[in-house]
Image (cartoon, rainbow, N blue to C red; front, side):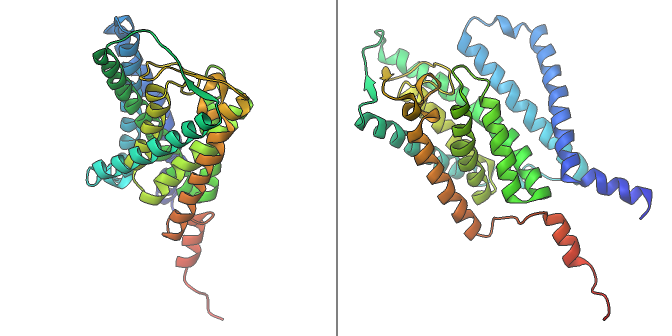
Length: 306
């Protein structure tokens, strides 16, 4: 094998592309940060507006990094990377329904147990509440899209291509939990819960459809339903909400200040849903075996004479 072939093989390797995506994302993030400082975006009058701009910047950063690397190396289109427009609205819609249903079930179980109660909040008009709900829908859309492109579109997809579905799910889920472990009110249990329930569920959602839109829909609805609708903290962060609420009872089950997603109720319900989705994806032929590239080379190698 000549040096040119070796270089091409190394360049096309999933690990190389993963590293290049990460490096390019860091460079682009620094560039956008500088541009934001020049435009004084950190001085926008509204905290929600600053949060939204930050989330949008992150989303644009990872999409650009993903596309530039994959198009530059393998001429892969956005559709091949899980971001095609055909069927996008359908996939987002089904994802929104799944996320809404799961988080509503979690809050419903806690309400039946007496751990979730509605309380009196500050007086607001319907227009103010609707505006806040729409603002947070936009913020969660940008943030959810960013995280799905980063964790499923880049990390999971390339790890799966290199190591197979099991390893990709394990590594991407663990990293997803660890990243959320830096949030306010995070505990080791919250980190584990996010890794298991959200990491498995969202990874399985991508595996089943090979569409980032479905996983993004689940992610958006999960956050918005928990925070903006039911008034529970989202990964330790308080948001404007339609319903004022209070969590009481054992934090191991309710999630306490981190939010319902860090409690045992969500861990049991959402992890079960993720495992079921994962099994269904595997039965649909979406499970990639361990070291698929090595297996493909071995199967394509000419048989030796006996």
